Length: 402
Image (cartoon, rainbow, N blue to C red; front, side):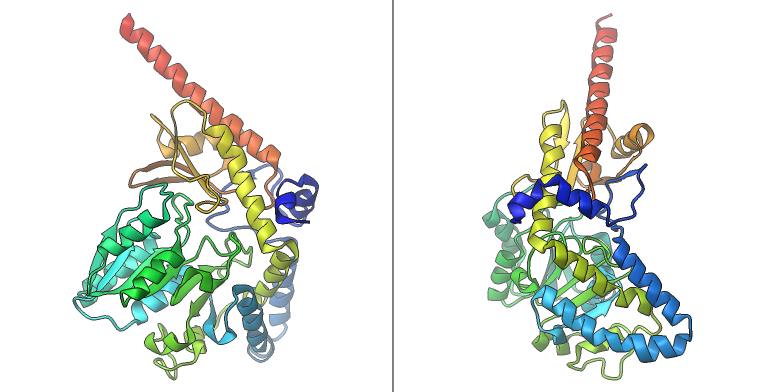
Protein backbone atom coordinates (compact mmCIF):
# COMPACT_ATOMS: atom_id res chain seq x y z
CA UNK A 1 0.00 0.00 0.00
CA UNK A 2 1.38 3.40 -0.97
CA UNK A 3 1.87 5.97 1.75
CA UNK A 4 -0.75 8.21 0.13
CA UNK A 5 -3.35 5.42 0.01
CA UNK A 6 -2.50 4.27 3.52
CA UNK A 7 -3.06 7.73 5.02
CA UNK A 8 -6.84 7.45 4.69
CA UNK A 9 -7.30 3.68 5.09
CA UNK A 10 -9.24 3.56 8.36
CA UNK A 11 -9.28 -0.25 8.43
CA UNK A 12 -5.49 -0.37 8.40
CA UNK A 13 -5.15 2.25 11.13
CA UNK A 14 -7.87 0.52 13.13
CA UNK A 15 -5.60 -2.53 13.21
CA UNK A 16 -2.74 -0.29 14.34
CA UNK A 17 -4.93 1.12 17.13
CA UNK A 18 -5.57 -2.41 18.40
CA UNK A 19 -1.79 -2.83 18.76
CA UNK A 20 -1.86 -0.26 21.59
CA UNK A 21 -3.39 -0.48 25.07
CA UNK A 22 -4.61 3.12 25.24
CA UNK A 23 -7.61 4.08 27.37
CA UNK A 24 -10.96 3.83 25.56
CA UNK A 25 -12.40 6.57 27.77
CA UNK A 26 -9.76 9.29 27.36
CA UNK A 27 -8.81 10.91 24.07
CA UNK A 28 -5.07 11.42 24.39
CA UNK A 29 -3.99 14.25 22.10
CA UNK A 30 -0.75 15.00 23.93
CA UNK A 31 1.49 12.40 22.32
CA UNK A 32 4.15 15.02 21.66
CA UNK A 33 5.41 14.94 25.23
CA UNK A 34 5.68 11.16 25.37
CA UNK A 35 3.90 8.47 23.40
CA UNK A 36 2.46 5.18 24.63
CA UNK A 37 4.18 2.03 23.46
CA UNK A 38 2.48 -0.66 21.39
CA UNK A 39 1.84 -3.87 23.29
CA UNK A 40 4.71 -5.68 21.59
CA UNK A 41 7.14 -3.12 23.05
CA UNK A 42 5.54 -3.30 26.49
CA UNK A 43 5.78 -7.09 26.42
CA UNK A 44 9.45 -6.98 25.44
CA UNK A 45 10.18 -4.51 28.24
CA UNK A 46 8.38 -6.61 30.85
CA UNK A 47 10.06 -9.81 29.61
CA UNK A 48 13.55 -8.28 29.84
CA UNK A 49 12.73 -6.77 33.24
CA UNK A 50 11.67 -10.12 34.66
CA UNK A 51 14.72 -11.72 33.09
CA UNK A 52 16.99 -9.20 34.85
CA UNK A 53 15.39 -9.92 38.21
CA UNK A 54 16.38 -13.60 38.07
CA UNK A 55 19.97 -12.56 38.81
CA UNK A 56 20.44 -8.82 38.17
CA UNK A 57 24.20 -8.42 37.96
CA UNK A 58 24.54 -11.51 35.74
CA UNK A 59 21.67 -10.97 33.34
CA UNK A 60 22.00 -7.18 33.13
CA UNK A 61 25.77 -6.84 32.81
CA UNK A 62 26.75 -10.09 31.12
CA UNK A 63 23.75 -10.93 28.96
CA UNK A 64 21.57 -7.93 28.10
CA UNK A 65 24.44 -5.44 27.98
CA UNK A 66 25.93 -7.51 25.16
CA UNK A 67 22.84 -6.76 23.12
CA UNK A 68 23.69 -3.07 22.85
CA UNK A 69 25.87 -3.57 19.79
CA UNK A 70 23.08 -5.29 17.89
CA UNK A 71 20.70 -2.50 18.92
CA UNK A 72 23.25 0.09 17.82
CA UNK A 73 23.33 -1.52 14.36
CA UNK A 74 19.53 -1.55 14.18
CA UNK A 75 19.27 2.13 15.13
CA UNK A 76 22.07 3.09 12.76
CA UNK A 77 20.23 1.39 9.91
CA UNK A 78 17.04 3.30 10.76
CA UNK A 79 19.02 6.55 10.95
CA UNK A 80 21.03 5.94 7.78
CA UNK A 81 24.41 6.45 9.48
CA UNK A 82 27.40 4.41 10.62
CA UNK A 83 26.85 2.48 13.84
CA UNK A 84 30.07 4.01 15.19
CA UNK A 85 28.27 7.39 15.13
CA UNK A 86 25.38 6.36 17.41
CA UNK A 87 25.33 6.45 21.22
CA UNK A 88 22.31 5.05 23.09
CA UNK A 89 21.14 7.17 26.01
CA UNK A 90 17.98 8.23 27.81
CA UNK A 91 16.55 11.24 25.99
CA UNK A 92 17.22 14.21 23.73
CA UNK A 93 18.05 16.49 26.67
CA UNK A 94 20.84 14.18 27.80
CA UNK A 95 22.22 13.87 24.28
CA UNK A 96 22.16 17.58 23.53
CA UNK A 97 23.56 18.49 26.94
CA UNK A 98 26.42 16.08 26.26
CA UNK A 99 27.32 18.10 23.18
CA UNK A 100 26.57 21.56 24.58
CA UNK A 101 28.71 21.03 27.68
CA UNK A 102 31.30 18.89 25.90
CA UNK A 103 32.40 21.23 23.12
CA UNK A 104 35.54 23.29 23.55
CA UNK A 105 34.16 26.83 23.51
CA UNK A 106 35.82 29.86 25.05
CA UNK A 107 34.82 33.35 26.13
CA UNK A 108 33.71 35.42 23.16
CA UNK A 109 32.69 32.47 20.98
CA UNK A 110 29.19 32.98 19.60
CA UNK A 111 26.27 30.55 19.37
CA UNK A 112 23.20 31.29 17.25
CA UNK A 113 19.94 29.85 18.54
CA UNK A 114 16.21 30.52 18.46
CA UNK A 115 13.77 31.78 21.06
CA UNK A 116 11.63 28.79 20.04
CA UNK A 117 14.23 26.15 20.87
CA UNK A 118 13.42 23.68 23.63
CA UNK A 119 13.69 25.18 27.16
CA UNK A 120 16.21 22.61 28.42
CA UNK A 121 18.51 23.43 25.54
CA UNK A 122 18.17 27.18 25.98
CA UNK A 123 18.97 26.77 29.67
CA UNK A 124 22.01 24.64 28.90
CA UNK A 125 23.37 27.33 26.61
CA UNK A 126 22.61 30.01 29.20
CA UNK A 127 24.61 28.00 31.72
CA UNK A 128 27.60 27.93 29.36
CA UNK A 129 27.16 31.65 28.79
CA UNK A 130 27.17 32.29 32.54
CA UNK A 131 30.02 29.90 33.26
CA UNK A 132 32.33 30.35 30.26
CA UNK A 133 31.50 33.77 28.85
CA UNK A 134 30.33 32.64 25.44
CA UNK A 135 27.87 34.91 23.64
CA UNK A 136 24.35 33.77 22.76
CA UNK A 137 22.76 35.38 19.70
CA UNK A 138 18.99 34.92 19.62
CA UNK A 139 16.73 34.90 16.58
CA UNK A 140 12.93 35.11 16.55
CA UNK A 141 11.15 32.80 14.12
CA UNK A 142 7.58 33.76 13.12
CA UNK A 143 5.06 31.00 13.85
CA UNK A 144 4.46 29.85 11.21
CA UNK A 145 7.16 30.73 8.68
CA UNK A 146 6.72 29.20 5.22
CA UNK A 147 9.76 30.45 3.31
CA UNK A 148 13.06 28.56 3.10
CA UNK A 149 15.03 31.63 2.13
CA UNK A 150 13.59 33.60 5.03
CA UNK A 151 14.62 30.84 7.45
CA UNK A 152 18.18 30.81 6.15
CA UNK A 153 18.37 34.61 6.23
CA UNK A 154 17.31 34.74 9.90
CA UNK A 155 20.22 32.52 10.90
CA UNK A 156 22.66 34.01 8.41
CA UNK A 157 22.04 37.58 9.56
CA UNK A 158 22.74 36.53 13.15
CA UNK A 159 26.15 35.03 12.31
CA UNK A 160 29.49 36.77 12.56
CA UNK A 161 33.12 35.73 12.22
CA UNK A 162 32.94 34.65 15.87
CA UNK A 163 30.04 32.22 15.37
CA UNK A 164 31.15 28.70 16.28
CA UNK A 165 27.82 26.90 16.67
CA UNK A 166 24.39 27.14 15.07
CA UNK A 167 21.74 25.34 17.14
CA UNK A 168 18.62 24.30 15.18
CA UNK A 169 15.41 22.69 16.35
CA UNK A 170 14.25 20.51 13.45
CA UNK A 171 10.60 20.59 14.50
CA UNK A 172 9.59 23.29 16.97
CA UNK A 173 7.91 21.69 19.97
CA UNK A 174 5.77 24.76 20.73
CA UNK A 175 4.01 24.84 17.37
CA UNK A 176 5.02 21.80 15.32
CA UNK A 177 6.51 23.89 12.53
CA UNK A 178 9.35 22.18 10.63
CA UNK A 179 12.57 24.10 10.04
CA UNK A 180 14.62 23.50 6.83
CA UNK A 181 17.69 22.24 8.72
CA UNK A 182 19.80 21.19 5.74
CA UNK A 183 19.62 24.59 4.03
CA UNK A 184 20.56 26.38 7.26
CA UNK A 185 23.31 23.85 7.99
CA UNK A 186 24.84 24.23 4.53
CA UNK A 187 24.95 27.99 4.99
CA UNK A 188 26.45 27.67 8.48
CA UNK A 189 29.11 25.23 7.31
CA UNK A 190 30.05 27.56 4.48
CA UNK A 191 30.71 30.21 7.13
CA UNK A 192 32.85 27.86 9.21
CA UNK A 193 30.37 27.03 11.98
CA UNK A 194 29.28 23.64 13.29
CA UNK A 195 25.62 22.62 13.55
CA UNK A 196 23.70 21.01 16.42
CA UNK A 197 20.23 19.69 15.61
CA UNK A 198 17.50 18.94 18.14
CA UNK A 199 15.42 16.21 16.47
CA UNK A 200 13.37 15.29 19.55
CA UNK A 201 10.05 15.67 17.73
CA UNK A 202 10.92 15.07 14.10
CA UNK A 203 12.53 11.64 14.52
CA UNK A 204 9.99 8.84 14.11
CA UNK A 205 7.33 11.31 12.99
CA UNK A 206 8.89 12.48 9.73
CA UNK A 207 10.56 10.00 7.37
CA UNK A 208 14.17 11.19 7.01
CA UNK A 209 17.76 10.12 7.56
CA UNK A 210 19.95 11.98 10.01
CA UNK A 211 22.34 13.19 7.33
CA UNK A 212 19.38 14.89 5.62
CA UNK A 213 19.54 17.51 8.38
CA UNK A 214 23.16 18.47 7.75
CA UNK A 215 23.89 18.06 11.47
CA UNK A 216 27.35 17.59 12.90
CA UNK A 217 25.69 16.69 16.20
CA UNK A 218 22.09 15.52 16.73
CA UNK A 219 20.04 14.00 19.51
CA UNK A 220 16.50 12.69 19.80
CA UNK A 221 14.11 11.01 22.21
CA UNK A 222 12.94 7.55 21.19
CA UNK A 223 9.98 7.59 23.62
CA UNK A 224 8.18 10.20 21.55
CA UNK A 225 7.26 9.30 17.98
CA UNK A 226 9.18 6.02 17.75
CA UNK A 227 7.06 4.77 20.68
CA UNK A 228 10.02 3.17 22.46
CA UNK A 229 10.15 2.69 26.27
CA UNK A 230 10.04 5.80 28.45
CA UNK A 231 13.50 7.25 29.04
CA UNK A 232 15.21 6.15 25.82
CA UNK A 233 17.08 8.22 23.28
CA UNK A 234 20.08 8.43 21.01
CA UNK A 235 22.94 10.77 20.22
CA UNK A 236 24.49 11.08 16.76
CA UNK A 237 27.90 12.61 16.16
CA UNK A 238 29.79 12.55 12.89
CA UNK A 239 32.66 10.12 13.29
CA UNK A 240 35.35 12.73 12.71
CA UNK A 241 33.70 15.05 15.29
CA UNK A 242 33.58 12.60 18.22
CA UNK A 243 37.02 13.66 19.41
CA UNK A 244 35.79 17.27 19.69
CA UNK A 245 33.25 16.48 22.43
CA UNK A 246 34.24 15.65 26.00
CA UNK A 247 32.22 12.90 27.67
CA UNK A 248 29.57 14.40 29.95
CA UNK A 249 30.07 11.64 32.55
CA UNK A 250 33.30 9.95 33.57
CA UNK A 251 35.00 7.85 30.92
CA UNK A 252 38.38 6.15 30.50
CA UNK A 253 39.06 8.32 27.45
CA UNK A 254 36.73 11.33 27.76
CA UNK A 255 38.39 12.99 24.75
CA UNK A 256 38.70 9.79 22.74
CA UNK A 257 37.29 8.82 19.34
CA UNK A 258 34.94 6.01 20.47
CA UNK A 259 31.22 6.93 20.51
CA UNK A 260 30.79 4.58 23.49
CA UNK A 261 32.45 7.12 25.78
CA UNK A 262 29.03 8.79 25.94
CA UNK A 263 27.38 5.64 27.32
CA UNK A 264 29.15 5.39 30.69
CA UNK A 265 25.94 6.08 32.60
CA UNK A 266 26.49 3.50 35.33
CA UNK A 267 23.56 1.20 36.07
CA UNK A 268 20.74 1.94 33.65
CA UNK A 269 17.46 0.26 32.75
CA UNK A 270 18.80 -2.50 30.52
CA UNK A 271 15.27 -3.81 30.07
CA UNK A 272 13.91 -0.58 28.57
CA UNK A 273 17.05 -0.16 26.47
CA UNK A 274 16.81 -3.59 24.90
CA UNK A 275 13.08 -3.14 24.21
CA UNK A 276 13.95 -0.24 21.87
CA UNK A 277 14.59 -2.89 19.23
CA UNK A 278 10.94 -3.97 19.32
CA UNK A 279 9.88 -0.34 18.77
CA UNK A 280 12.14 -0.09 15.71
CA UNK A 281 10.64 -3.31 14.32
CA UNK A 282 7.09 -2.03 14.87
CA UNK A 283 7.95 1.27 13.19
CA UNK A 284 9.46 -0.54 10.20
CA UNK A 285 6.44 -2.85 9.81
CA UNK A 286 4.21 0.20 9.35
CA UNK A 287 6.78 2.10 7.29
CA UNK A 288 8.20 5.51 8.06
CA UNK A 289 6.62 7.23 5.07
CA UNK A 290 3.16 5.71 5.69
CA UNK A 291 3.39 6.86 9.29
CA UNK A 292 4.38 10.39 8.29
CA UNK A 293 1.55 10.70 5.78
CA UNK A 294 -1.01 9.41 8.27
CA UNK A 295 0.13 11.80 10.99
CA UNK A 296 0.03 14.75 8.60
CA UNK A 297 -3.42 13.68 7.40
CA UNK A 298 -4.71 13.58 10.98
CA UNK A 299 -3.41 17.06 11.76
CA UNK A 300 -4.80 18.52 8.53
CA UNK A 301 -8.14 16.77 9.12
CA UNK A 302 -8.95 18.70 12.28
CA UNK A 303 -6.99 21.82 11.33
CA UNK A 304 -8.99 22.28 8.13
CA UNK A 305 -12.21 22.17 10.11
CA UNK A 306 -10.94 24.43 12.90
CA UNK A 307 -9.43 27.14 10.71
CA UNK A 308 -12.86 28.55 9.79
CA UNK A 309 -14.03 28.95 13.40
CA UNK A 310 -14.60 32.53 14.55
CA UNK A 311 -11.68 34.18 16.37
CA UNK A 312 -9.43 31.16 15.89
CA UNK A 313 -5.66 31.70 16.00
CA UNK A 314 -3.53 29.06 14.23
CA UNK A 315 0.25 28.96 14.67
CA UNK A 316 1.11 25.90 12.58
CA UNK A 317 1.66 25.70 8.84
CA UNK A 318 -0.54 23.41 6.74
CA UNK A 319 2.05 23.02 4.00
CA UNK A 320 3.52 19.49 4.01
CA UNK A 321 7.16 20.61 3.99
CA UNK A 322 6.62 22.74 7.10
CA UNK A 323 4.40 20.58 9.34
CA UNK A 324 3.26 17.07 10.15
CA UNK A 325 1.41 15.75 13.24
CA UNK A 326 1.55 18.70 15.62
CA UNK A 327 -0.84 21.65 15.56
CA UNK A 328 -1.19 24.69 17.83
CA UNK A 329 -4.56 26.43 18.21
CA UNK A 330 -5.90 29.32 20.27
CA UNK A 331 -8.88 31.66 20.32
CA UNK A 332 -8.96 35.39 20.81
CA UNK A 333 -10.13 36.12 24.33
CA UNK A 334 -9.25 32.64 25.63
CA UNK A 335 -6.24 31.61 27.67
CA UNK A 336 -4.54 28.39 26.67
CA UNK A 337 -5.13 26.83 30.08
CA UNK A 338 -8.87 27.56 29.84
CA UNK A 339 -9.06 25.87 26.45
CA UNK A 340 -7.29 22.80 27.83
CA UNK A 341 -9.62 22.68 30.84
CA UNK A 342 -12.74 23.05 28.68
CA UNK A 343 -11.74 20.21 26.37
CA UNK A 344 -11.00 17.95 29.32
CA UNK A 345 -14.03 18.80 31.46
CA UNK A 346 -16.55 18.42 28.66
CA UNK A 347 -15.03 15.74 26.41
CA UNK A 348 -12.14 14.13 28.35
CA UNK A 349 -9.70 15.26 25.68
CA UNK A 350 -6.17 15.44 27.06
CA UNK A 351 -4.08 18.23 25.50
CA UNK A 352 -1.26 20.49 26.66
CA UNK A 353 -1.28 24.24 27.26
CA UNK A 354 1.39 26.09 25.31
CA UNK A 355 1.59 29.76 26.23
CA UNK A 356 4.96 31.16 25.19
CA UNK A 357 6.21 34.26 23.40
CA UNK A 358 3.36 35.07 20.96
CA UNK A 359 1.63 31.69 21.37
CA UNK A 360 -1.41 31.33 23.61
CA UNK A 361 -3.35 28.12 23.16
CA UNK A 362 -3.07 24.35 23.25
CA UNK A 363 -0.87 21.96 21.34
CA UNK A 364 -2.72 19.06 19.74
CA UNK A 365 -0.66 15.96 18.98
CA UNK A 366 -2.51 12.89 17.70
CA UNK A 367 -0.66 9.64 17.03
CA UNK A 368 -1.07 6.69 14.69
CA UNK A 369 -3.63 5.07 17.00
CA UNK A 370 -5.82 8.22 16.98
CA UNK A 371 -9.11 7.72 15.14
CA UNK A 372 -11.04 10.13 12.96
CA UNK A 373 -13.90 9.87 15.48
CA UNK A 374 -11.54 11.14 18.17
CA UNK A 375 -10.75 14.17 16.03
CA UNK A 376 -14.42 14.78 15.29
CA UNK A 377 -14.97 15.08 19.04
CA UNK A 378 -12.03 17.48 19.22
CA UNK A 379 -13.55 19.66 16.49
CA UNK A 380 -16.87 19.57 18.35
CA UNK A 381 -15.15 20.78 21.51
CA UNK A 382 -13.27 23.55 19.68
CA UNK A 383 -16.50 24.64 17.99
CA UNK A 384 -18.20 24.91 21.38
CA UNK A 385 -15.35 27.08 22.65
CA UNK A 386 -15.60 29.35 19.62
CA UNK A 387 -19.40 29.52 19.92
CA UNK A 388 -19.16 30.33 23.62
CA UNK A 389 -16.78 33.16 22.81
CA UNK A 390 -19.18 34.61 20.23
CA UNK A 391 -22.14 34.36 22.62
CA UNK A 392 -20.18 36.17 25.33
CA UNK A 393 -19.25 38.94 22.90
CA UNK A 394 -22.85 39.27 21.77
CA UNK A 395 -24.01 39.51 25.38
CA UNK A 396 -21.36 42.12 26.16
CA UNK A 397 -22.41 44.15 23.13
CA UNK A 398 -26.09 44.09 24.20
CA UNK A 399 -25.19 45.14 27.73
CA UNK A 400 -23.12 48.02 26.38
CA UNK A 401 -26.00 49.21 24.20
CA UNK A 402 -28.36 49.05 27.15
